[in-house]
Amino acid sequence: MSKIIAQDKSISVPGETLAVGMDILPGTGAYRDGEKIVAKRLGLVTIDGRTIKLIPLSGRYIPKTGDTVICKVIDVGFNGWRLDTNSAYSAMLSMKDATSDFIARGANLTQYYDLGDHIVCKIVNVTSQKLIDVTMRGPGLRKLKGGRVIEVDPNKVPRIIGKQGSMVMMVKDATRCNISVGQNGLIWIDGEPVDELLAIQTIRKIERESHMSGLTDKIKEFLENSGKK
Image (tube, rainbow, N blue to C red):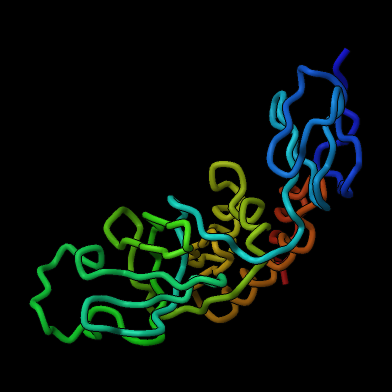
């Protein structure tokens, strides 16, 4: 008889038995030991159907193909731009992936993206040597103008976004801010100063309390009470 022992959204420690039985599958951060599913690391238990996995509570961002990220331009070369990905590895944006415009050889690339600019881009390739290529060609990929960029724990990004974007949409609606969330833990917020501040406070609260159950209702109440002040 299969049985899940750990509770969804509970904190587990390495070596802890999460479930027993061959019907239950180990996901990321867990492994099978005979009949048992055991935690590999400290993390937040997430149960998805018959799969049980652990989301790490902290750690640096590890670039993955397909991720949408917010990056900062740190170098402009002859053939493209080098970007800070908020990880141990930088990325390259080539001229062909930067824009649908034709860029003549020798053109001043800073007219497109200059040092210090933040952009929303998508990772299209990560080699075994952690060389990263990104593209700006796709829906929602763009240069960010105005606003401010804050950093959060990349492991908390799924909770900040919410199921099908529900959490971040609630924050957007309540604060009247434009918000873009990068899977690398950088978040761009643009609105009136007082609204930006509320958005940041709310995102920090989600980040702090991401392991708690009933988080959506708590954030909704926080935003409603903040709006009455």
